[in-house]
Amino acid sequence: MGMAKILIVDDDPFITKLTTKILTKIGYDTVLAAEDGARGLEAVEAHGPDIIICDLNMPGMDGLEFLRHLAERNAACGIVLVSGEEKRILQTAAQLAEAHRLNVLGSLQKPIKPDPLKALLDTYAAQQEAAKRGPIDVLSLKDIQDGLKSGCIDVFFQPKVSVADRRIVGVEALARWRGADGRLIPPIAFVPVIEDNGLIDEMTRQVFEKSIAVLADWWRKGLEISVAVNFSVDSLTRYEVFDLVSQAIAKEQADPGYVTIEVTESRIMDDIAAPLEILTRLRMKGLGLAIDDYGTGASSMQQLKRIPFTELKIDRAFVAGAPQDEEARAMLESSVSLAKRLGLSTVAEGVETETEWDLVAKLGVDVVQGYFIAKPMPADEVFVWAQEQGGLTSS
Image (cartoon, rainbow, N blue to C red; front, side, top):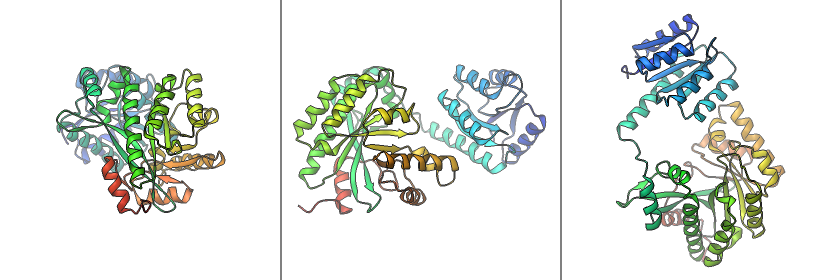
């Protein structure tokens, strides 16, 4: 840990001195300093620091501009943002840095205190440890093209339970990749390659067809729950998607009322006409429509008004922050009350602790999914889990 090289970029020599002192005390002895962004970049070139502690407000090149230049250089170092500004500005700066794909460890308000700083630096140490265990090898395009043909796409399901009685009401289908050696590979290693190479429709088709087959099988065995499948906005610009969905449901004789399409909005929709038509036609067939990660997307309010959604999914970010963070809590509360007024059901994602469960329950969220309840698992495990929870209708 004392090996990590730290660069402080701050125009105030007093603060730099103080921060250096704190760092020495918690065991970091290689500390460099630069008084503005331009000098900071020179130091990055010359010394290749592991971690940069960066002030936002500096004369000359300020912290935000400095971050942009770091991003252009594809800097891999950990970044801690520091500011005397209000918390909102810090949060926005952190989001901006993440949008630049920088490794943001976190942000701190001045004056810096040792414990929170140490906690952020520890996360960097943990990342390094994880990296030593070997990076996740991203699959090659050829692996993916072959794998899509040979059935490497596997589907796991994460239970969703009703807050009122903790009974299972549905699952979310999640794509996994099973390598030739049987090992499971996480989405981060294949989804970006699939998206960048125009293969998302093929993956979605396979996940959807498998999910509907599983749903039909569960119903035959007395597990009468719903399934939600993610569709990226890119897929929803092609009219064939409507047929794909209709045919899979007809083939398995599934009840469309128990199928939900989750719309993931990774970017602003350029062409709203096609998704609007497809989603409305699916809704007319009786399928549910969920807006995913509400509050993190591009223009959620507008989408809610335009598309006949039935369900609003609240992103983990607002759930996790809410017990401590006023703003996350405000977002959470307003999302729930907006959903209620629009007659949508609400699903809180990523509930991991009793405290988070209590809070979403108190706010009147309808359904919860997350590790506090159950992790994603294969279809047969879901069935056993539901049986143990008493979720089957007596046959």
